[in-house]
Length: 331
Image 1 (cartoon, rainbow, N blue to C red):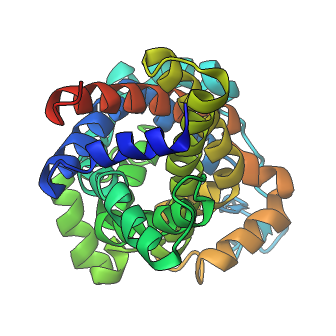
Image 2 (cartoon, rainbow, N blue to C red):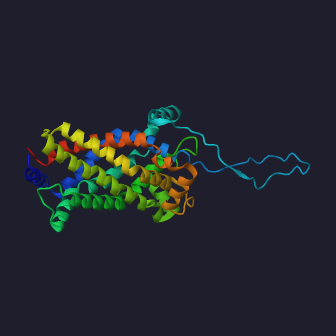
């Protein structure tokens, strides 16, 4: 199979209108998010573990003759209580202590995020790729790596700037535990209002810059990697363009996304979930996290992140490809 034929097939996809592409991508992403959301919750809990505040000595009467209370207790390093261990252990612990429904805390914001985010980063990918292709004049018979990477970075970054508030709310719902102060917000809408009122508009876009970096990288790893791997499998292995092809390309895309995005993802989650004033910014969060917990902290939650991204990519890409067959009227 030649790349000319592949290019012809891609052109057929582009006959659909932009609104149809956006809706198709958003629908597939929402379905994937619903299926894999417990894995994402486990990932968030593991990423913020170890971020407990400094513990102080309790105010107790002094044992000397002054019999006074210590008004300014000396901070002592907090004893790290490892509550979650591994993917299965984290899900089991959350289910046992807080109930199964807790695994879906923030689902509403998550679905809102996918409708805003994935519909843009995936739904506009082919359109933006065609635009960059006309500018760069890359060989249409080749893989067009530069064009694809630029398109992935552009749509990934643009999607975050629009969908950032939904990501902030989703992370805070997933991070909240019953043992701390209960759920911070009664509902998703109340969360948007509360954050906007207490932290201002900037609070809703908290962590936007690391999130732009993270999702631009993830977009390239997921969409571009899927696109290239799918074309290479079609060309060199003559694998039929069916679910087996989509599954294989999705697994590679999920693995690539997990490896390159985990460090930025941990910093993004920590910073988004932090109370106002805890960190001066995302870079400060990264520096302090590395100094306190070591470089391994940047890959906390790697296993659930890998499981979630791979399973999410598999469900999303297979759903998206099947929806395209129906919606785009492809034979």
